[in-house]
Each structure stands twice: as C-alpha cells, then as structure tokens.
Length: 176
Image (tube, rainbow, N blue to C red):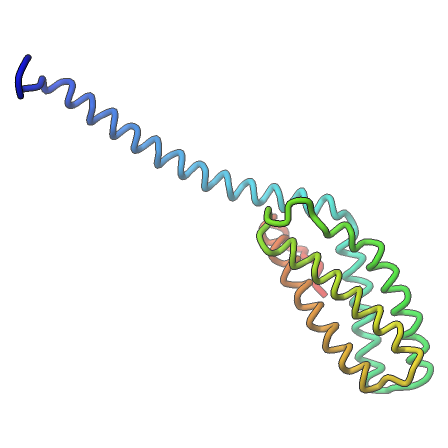
C-alpha cells in the first residue's frame, strides 16, 4: 500500500520485535546481575582458597596475643612482660610472613573488603612490632594504648574477613 496507510501485519511484527528485544534486554540484565553475584561469590571463594591457611594462622596467633595482653593489663608482672615479649616476637614473625598473601592484584574485585583485610594485616603487624619493642621496657600505660590500637586493627580485620567469607557463602570467617 502507498500513502499514509501501512499494512497492519508489519506494524504488529515491529511491535512484537520491539517487545522481544525489551524482554531479551531485561533477561540479559537479570542474567548479568545474577552472573555478577556468582562472579563475586566465585572470586571470593578463589581469594579464600589462594590465602590457604594464612587467615586461620592470623586468627590463632592474634587470639593468643589478645588474651595475653588482657591478662598482663590486669596483672602486670616481669614474668608476664617476658612471656608477652616471646609471644609478640612470634606473632610478628608469623603475621609478617603471611601478610603479603593478603595483597591482591585486583583490589576492587571484592570491593573494599580485600583492601581492608590487607590494611588490617599491615596495621596489626605494625602494632605487634611496637608491642614487641615495648615489652622490654616498663610499658604499662603504653601497653594500654597499643592494646587499643590492636583492638581497632582486629575490628578492621574482622570486618574484612566477614565481608569476604559472607560473599563466598562461607560461615567460618576467621574473626579475632
């Protein structure tokens, strides 16, 4: 047909094609979102697997150090400081050895959690190093300050591991 009149059939085909494209686009968007979640989950699982036993080692070491610090704050003794000296030296070596494992080539892949975990490992290593230097001196007041910094670093660690382990659908986050 000519003029302003168009056949009804091509118009219906055009509308059907547009509707199909819209549905396909919506389906692709839903698939992308679902794929993004799956990708985040698989990335988190791969990150956890790459870390291996390092997070559990950090957790155990820092749990022991936190307990010893609390005991020494309540009952400061020369023997307690000597024991803390040995424990902080061990904790520093252990954490410093595994700390590079937390650095990632793709810091944005799991959002802030990877960067937060790496920063917490660095911060805890620094605090433990300061504790190690302190234990040879008389540092009751300084120990309180470092214990507070240790708690802040531990809270950052916990936030990072909980976020990553949750994304990987793993309930066993090695919190301190």
